[in-house]
Length: 224
Image (cartoon, rainbow, N blue to C red; front, top):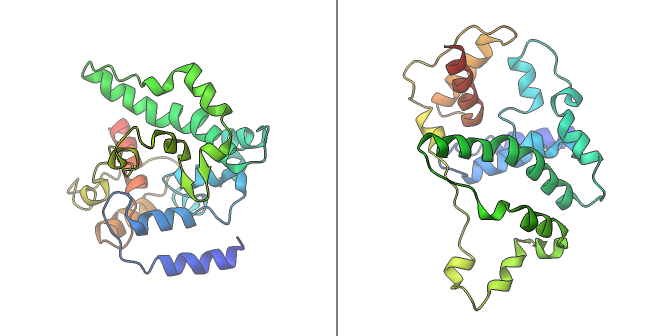
């Protein structure tokens, strides 16, 4: 998408009221718009990042090149054996997002309370089988996870087609008042004033910066 058109659409999206709900409409729309003017090879990491590259440049003092930020994702995208964006996106989530984020956090949280949470859907043979399935069984005519049609007549409609529900916490709402005084330790290479401004705007309800602020809290905890 041309950068000028992209900026115009994003300014319109910024006029929407900021919701603190998990996966609210304004959150999904703004996150979707965040990556469209970047090369396709970095769409996925830009969409999933706490801050997109242009905003990172406001927070970090050193210049950040896309090729350095997302080298692993770019390499994975370019090494794919197909031009299909669905296949390439699935490779990103399988090799980077799941292994480096979601599964890691789940395992640490579960092991802390001696809970065994290994997912049966991560069985190697099952994963490889799913990777070989044609995309028409994964996404067809706007319908995601189309393969669940195979369960028609075997499962009640309310189970087979109910909306996805993760384990999201009300982070956006919590971060408007917790902690009472945001931690702003001096960190080499990071502009403290930029971090403080993002805290201020989030707490005032002007932006939803839950991902960045949660990451900042994690960093502050490490430095404490």
